[in-house]
Length: 429
Image (cartoon, rainbow, N blue to C red; front, side, top):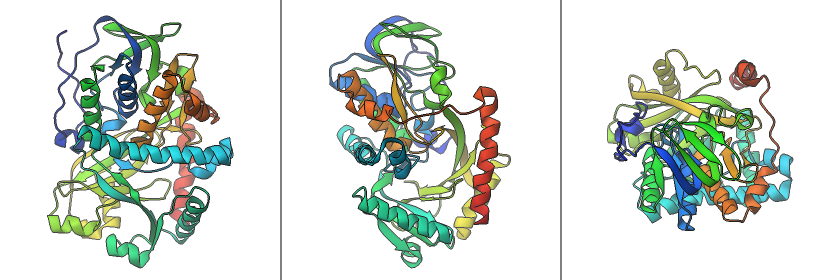
């Protein structure tokens, strides 16, 4: 089967700095496997690794390149929990199940470390993550969260007051922070490519440049592409924000939200080391948040500036530079080598949306900004269900999810209007 010229990754620092991964063939003709997976991102690769280890024949179809979507473009922060927060999960499914789900989220973080070690992936892992406060009310919110995590979930974090935080993060912008030594950050495309190499070595077939045009449901569900068909006993939909009408009932429950990252020019090593002295990743807790970390080659990777209209903001590089210098005035005059973006798939309640369509089509979406760790967990949970143990997938399926109002035509303007209120709240108090 001849390989064709692959679609390129978007122009990002990740794509430019990752070790090249050989392109894979397009799907051609009719292929038969035990499990067919749509999407060669972290969810699909995680499920494939688990299933291949259990003896299933597995193939993945990817519309572009391995890791082309959020898996290869994200902020790279590996953190506990889910996008909606613990209290929201508890309100939806009850406290006992919420505690189990929280523990499973910690498993997701641990899985990242385990897979890096097991497969020898050079993903430039660094320990540590801090949520930081800009306003006094956010100091109170973080301290209350610290108490909740300790008392209800058995997960103690460190509270750093302004003086303690500035000893590590000498920025005038922050009043305190909640530090987690077990979370961390990595190069997401290197990590995704590393999982792909492991999956290929385990016998998983990956077809690139093979966009799925239809899902045929039934006893042997089939993924149809422009060049072939992948027939299986089980199908996994791991396209997240990029499903593109393959399963309309899923698409109605998520919204693609643009988020953007810039990589500065290389900084003098001493300056870079002084920005974040312990090498941790950092995120504030504004609704439209900033997040940042250092790269292995002494750049600052600075993210934020979400777009709820799916249109890139005007003067993106200039806006990102202004946001960056509010945090680090000492970087005035430093520019970005690359600025790029991608879609986060948010659910309406920001909770994970994982489950089944019928008996043999599985899905995971709605990672809502917590995808690097939660995707690995999702892949494992789906693989467990395919192997016959669906307890955890059934638990996640208990989380209720509503459609975004307005359908495809109106959901974006309605969300833009709603988000304006949260941004105003961040600005005023």
